[in-house]
Amino acid sequence: MPNAEERPCRYKPWLLIIVLLGAVLRFVPVWFGLPFDRARPDEETAIGHAVAVLGGDPNPHFFDWPSLTFYLFAAAFAVASWIHRLLALDPALTVNEQYLVARGRRRARCIVLPRCRDVARQGITFRDDRRAHDAVHHDVAGSARSTPHDAGAHRVRSTIGIASFVGAGFAGGLAASTKYSGAAILAAFAASEYIWTREANRMASRVQIWTPALALVVSFACGFVAATPFALIDYRLFSSGLVFDVMHLSTGHAGPDLGRGWSYHLERSLPTALGLPVFAAAILGAIRMATTYARAALIIGVFCAALYTLLAPGRTVFFRYILPIVPLACVSAAVAVQYAADWLARRVRVSSRTLVVALAFAVSVRTLVNSVWMDVLLAKTDTRVLAGRWLAARVKPEESLYDAGGAYAGASLVGLSMHRWTVETFDPTRNAFTNSSGRLPDWLVLPESPLVYGTVPMDLRRLSAEKYELAQTIPATRLQNDASVYDLQDAFFLPMSGFQTVIRPGPTIRIFRRLQSPR
Image 1 (tube, rainbow, N blue to C red):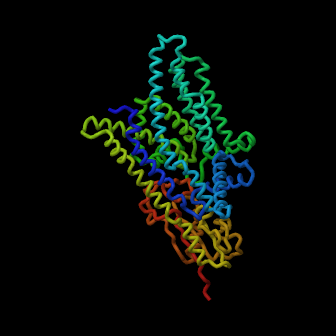
Image 2: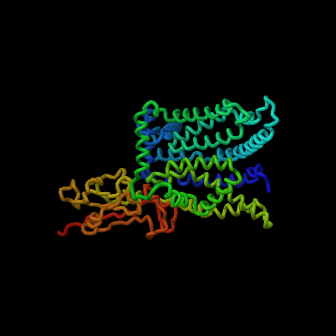
Image 3: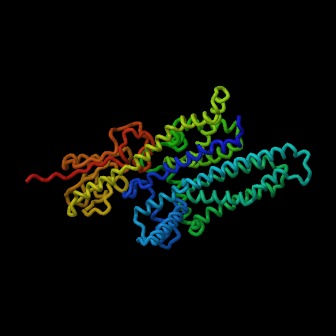
């Protein structure tokens, strides 16, 4: 069987194809939902804080999330504004342009050339790691006859250089400054240090063993503070933000109680995000890694366990919380595919390389189809945008409109001239509009979806049947489909899987016109 050093080069063309495909899936369609600015919840919050930073206040005064994303968005907006000036355009970005720039910045890590460079770098790193690993074991085996000047294992670690530990720690701090749960990377660092101390504690002094670890931890803290500096400067507000996050995670978000994270993510989030074949392969691959690549398995496993432990007690179970585990699960699935291909190659007259490609495709094709399908649906015009366009052509400035969808499920009414009644004006206990002196709005906009956002009271539906006529329906789905898996706590109106009956993003929207009183 070919050794592991050959595999990065042998599969490099396929890795490049995967990178290109991933980049396309990531960037298309970056324009989804626009001009409706709440198609992806929380974007407006991040963009708002970034605009405030550009306005001259570097303190976001908001620490429910760390600050690096705000600063990166602000920098991207500044660059886009500078490009506008070069092109003799208005330097002020429109709302749509802000969303496109922000989304593009978030997806920039999938640009093709850097990813290709990373593939090559991973191959080099894997090769050097194997050499270092072999050197350590050689020194362990020869430690009984080593001279006082022989510090082989220490030399191995010295070849890595203290700067590498500082760089790794600083990068980990930046990760935690993007999302607090990124701090789980410290657990992986601790596992790596544990492996090192077990193998080298008889060949190096305590200073030699612990100095790199100390440098890594200090640089981690520096990386976090460099990107979220007001965590120290405005510590009181920062600590209150952390307390809010803990409470929000533990008590749950809007929507049904879906149980604790430890069971929900294992039963729902991960199988849906990965697809059942990849999920099953990841479990088998984890077993294979634990028995064959114990060191790598320990480091990866400790990170996953640390992150999962943070999420496990909570009742806020957004699918996106579990995303950092997804790429590592894919690594584990790849180990299972490689092992299965090697096992089959010894029994059939087919090369291991061919079998790897065939098995990888068989395992991942369902997930790939789901990814493409979701992108195709996201590229379609959102129902909330279509509803806004339909109303803009028909509602008169002197008429009134009540949209029960609220901020997330309502129609996109930006720029429409009318008397718009807010969601709070309808009192379901009285079955009446509180600010209307008994009058009814000329138009009703009622959403319908599996999510709780924009839930319409039954009394209001009854009112729409008695006093209104249905003027337009903009469907999001053809039929009720129990196979569709939604993130039930998130205001994202597309399922994660089960797209068979989905027509386009958004809730189904029904528009009603008030019946005219008989003369």
